[in-house]
Image: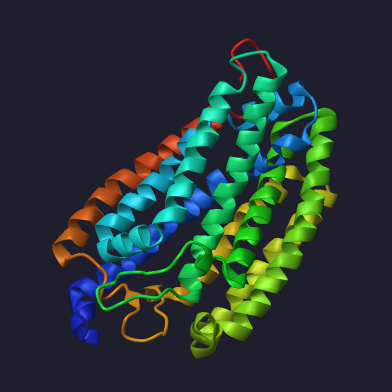
Length: 354
């Protein structure tokens, strides 16, 4: 089998282009892992206030209690990988979108505090306050992630130095807001599917009702975002026009989405949950294919776009980081699998519960 350097010579490309494309994929895998894993506990947080009794709310908290913090490891790892592999993108996005990123960080902090503090005192006002904080912060995280993603796809005002100069409310144009709402509804559906797996009795049936309504809202918003993308963001559809075989990906996505209500109606919660996992994976795969090789689109589009070619680290840095990734990513995956195995089964309240 020819080496990467030999392939580079055959195609007339320097080696760093191969490594930068590989790191595009690896960073994408980390963020997909975060969306799949933390997506369902963010969705559970959005649904939290719909459970009326204190007992039911405690069950929802304990369904995600042992795993929510481990899920966020994928976000931290993805951010670190982005910083190491594409430092210019990291610097541009996190400085240019400083305010939404800080609000996102505060929402993650308040969410964690709400989970830990909520059951420390028995007072009703105390628990209601933290319940509200947990719900609002979980919803805000999903919405802001979608807004940031939508702006990256739509394009940002980049200058020659890679600086982004845009106000907070300028980020809230129709397309990013639609993507933000779609993300919230997607996580809500995903969270409801997870709760069906972890809960029993009337609360599990209530979660099934939430999932059925969330899938309807998701399909409507997905159709709106897809239509908007095809009409006003043709650059995202360009790879699919250039390489027709890629059009199998949207068809697979539609099949996976359609399978969610099918499995719900057949009372197969594990397959329904796996289908919602698959929907998240396929949607982010479509986004990645549409963006490649760009990481941030400039307005107006052109040579100022941040791509895997002009925003990556040196070949030596990418090579060293690749070795670290091959060691670290299996460890993170093994830790995640072990935690889910240890805390498998239905949720029961006891003296150690939240």
